[in-house]
Amino acid sequence: MMATLPLQVFDNFIAPYHVGQPLLLLFVLTTVGALTQGRKILAVNTVLFGFVFVLTPNSITPFHYRLLGLLLLVVGPIVYVTSR
Image (cartoon, rainbow, N blue to C red; front, side, top):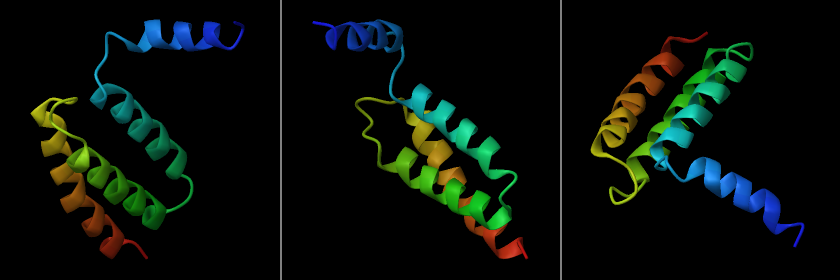
């Protein structure tokens, strides 16, 4: 009984959102965390989330998150190449 209470609270909090919004929040948080690590880590993070946004099914996210994923897949390698 005690284990279901936190899951119900989390479910009630996340229910109005679709999968793209928590993924976007996670991308922003990991990008902020990667800023101090270097540009190569930032580029790998960008490419990784680009794949996640592109491979997330359209049935659970709007189409504009797939476009964001394509943009991240283009920008990530450019950042990686331009890093030292």
